[in-house]
Image (tube, rainbow, N blue to C red; front, side, top):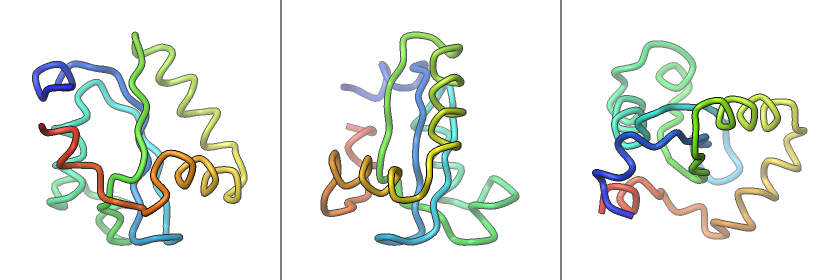
Length: 102
């Protein structure tokens, strides 16, 4: 999926500090821009404080409402479920940022 498509695509994403490290779950209407802001410490707060910069998982949604519902659901999950979700889609814990920019 090209950058133009993702720029205005509601998405839920998970960032990690490293494999099995600190996780952050967020929602955005512009995944490329938002993850870039996290990676470059533009965003004050949790991700900057704890160095959580690797995009390890994301889901695209048709509208922001469904993305927000999914974000809230994932935030309630226990850590083991979150790790299983990441490893199912991204077993090597690759940073997926470049792939969403292509």
